[in-house]
Image 1 (tube, rainbow, N blue to C red):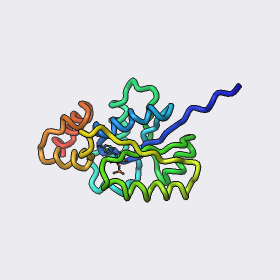
Image 2: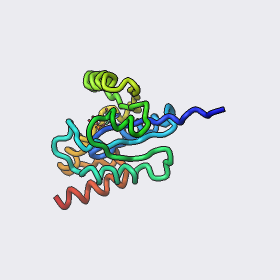
Image 3: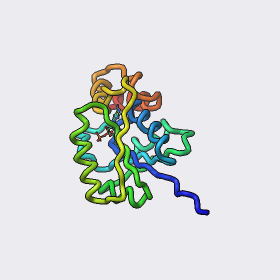
Image 4: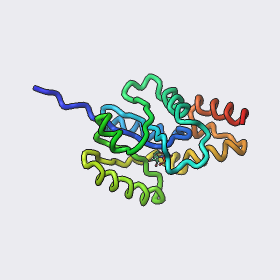
Length: 167
Ligand code: ADP
């Protein structure tokens, strides 16, 4: 008898930087998939002025999930569906914080469905206390000298402080 193939989910985004909201979604994804690939987009339509380059973001996410052997971190260029296919991923995970996320997420999910029907997008909802949290807000508050210690993991906080100190 052949065993069913382990399910692989892709969690794409910019993650500049990874926040507790992203971590929450990634851990939830492990209850629906056997393996999760956190996929940092090299070309993001979202991030206008990044704080960390892609290699640094990948490194930070790896630090955050150290010891989680079902989570891998990679970067990708080009179409998400092409990367999903190459990685053998049949699920794409996205987080929904509020109604404001919905329209864009729905459009993207339906576009990806058109581009490759082999992938299914699933939406997961974070714990309520992370609903207001976004990377852009963390970047902004940190740049203005605010304390973002309750929004990001210690390694992220440390690197953020060092980065902003040195311009
Ligand atoms: P994008 O580049 O599309 O803005 P991000 O890199 O910020 O995406 O995040 C990737 C995914 O994680 C998106 O689906 C986004 O909705 C989700 N996400 C970001 N922050 C949170 C949060 N605080 N709670 C739940 N989901 C989140």
